[in-house]
Length: 577
Image (cartoon, rainbow, N blue to C red):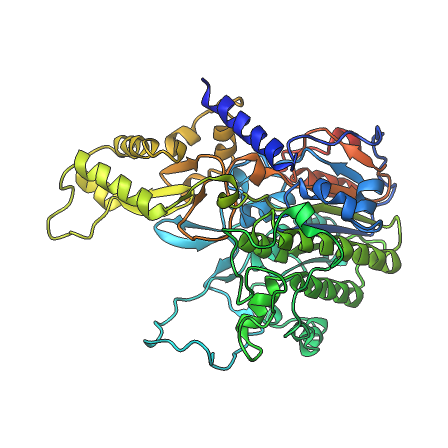
């Protein structure tokens, strides 16, 4: 039996059993005619990213949405229900790098959030050459946790920069076309989410670390409106306000299941069930509170207030030169990691996101004007259900490392001197990549290709490993019919990836953390993202043609009346042409 046919059956079976139905597109409500872009570019293009909002959420909970948020966008805009990332390492950095470059990690180089490069750890949106502006706040010593030993000297932190992004974005093209007259801003709680979509020359990229700030890559001070926003202490107003269900009369269990489920985490001193405190488990306001704030819907509320301040202070969309704003809401992701996609918490933050979008659209209508702006909404990746709900395993990377080390040590005895007892074959496993210890491989006297083949053989014997793909395989040609290999190849940039990639069986999670979930696989539950496009010339209705979030680069370029980014490989969908 073809293993990939079995994989498709398993994925489809889960969709049916769970009632999510995210592999089946809803029946189109209208046969939409191709769009007619405005004769002039829109005044403002707004990219909204809901981190980890899997594509099926907008269908699953649509009956619960109000009329003016997601339903407005679904009704009056183009709603693409069959939207998937075409690559395999589905995490935040590659997602945000891909949307407005219009390409994948094999070209733009952002292959993960972190990776090993030339033996050194690299962060997708940071460098030790830069500092935070303003500096991170200093909080009083934590009165609850007292370290037993003096803390080790911290290693230098990689601070925000787009230096590692190798492709231009729509933002870069817009700046090239209009210079300083076109304003570009990226806003998020996460640095990489504000930085990567806005390219090399934005007017500002701001993220949250107790205050909203930036890095010395962008300048030596923040604009007055950012300093004023921080001084207002808006971020502090939720301290002690519990996160309760936003719709207390609604039967949450009917729509998402019970509140207390095995495998759910407890957040930042927030507990497993409603209501969730937002103090961070500490009696005074400090770093833990800000972590808890981000891990609740209040983090999205904070970012929306910041985005409104940006639009007003910078006058975005108020003249004939088009502007670009990226707003990436991170709290959905943090909540999803903690409680899982089928939790009441994720349902509640999605309902709140609907209300938030209604607020945002009303604000844009008033500030910029109906018919004057383009809005695109997507996500940077999907998410895997809790393993405890699917019966899938949590697979320890330590276990996999021991398996490889034992196999190679048996195959190639004593590759290093007896005095070097700590030498190991595996340098690290940064999922999905296995990095071998070059010194030990060289000492074995065997060709590296042979050693990598043995690693693949060892891992393929593990019951929870679906398959492996070597760097040599990914550097060659793979058939388009091999979906897993094709997706993994599009995430492969040789100098930033390992010697071999591991693909676990569907719904299995890497790591031994006993609670929560994650994403990052090439399976449909991780690649599925919403795609909504709303603006002048766009006729409302469901679109069932397959597309990708990277099509947003071509869409934004067309409505801004600029050329596509040079590496953009995904066209405007036919129903928008």
